[in-house]
Length: 282
Image (tube, rainbow, N blue to C red; front, side):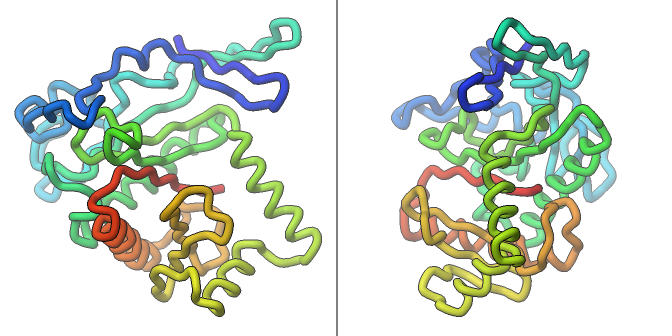
């Protein structure tokens, strides 16, 4: 059973999960031959190799856990956290721990083995975003869960262990310290200026234009002023909203093309680099 342990110095909770050591590593080194689609558990026809699906978009109402899907969500076969069980929170002297309760899911973004998120037409990217939203709304019903993180590792250098394009979702019983730091920073800005920090960023970046990568009526894509990584990009909603799962259809219709184009531009400039993206939501 995984567990969470709290660092007593900085207050950060850390997941301890020996089960993750057994996950597949088919792209562990750049020179290693990649598996064929016939061996990939995420390809259509190989559904028996994965846990039973939680959600799938099937245009022709085909049977669950079979082919003919466009997006498929499954439990991670090597989860960092488990849904079943009690929290078991306890103190061990000065230390704190709890059972590794949560959820760990995989969002398979496309049935095509060699197709990546940047390759998908806008409507298919929208479907991936809707899958994110549907899973967040469902998991929010579990009162034990306090934060839901969605992220994507693309390429071996970014931490991907399977080539087939996918994202991951981890639902946590704690709020990560990095998220708390962001919330506290936003709160301090509001207390000082009585304005939203993200609204201020949007106004200044849009006005100056120097760091704007892409823009449409609903979203602004920028390179942040204090970027931590080369070619880091943020996609910010123009609407004053804190929760991704509250996005409406119109917003997804604009988010999908700006996300796809940002990834395509990065591919063009950097010759298809490895990358990570993280969905930041309240």
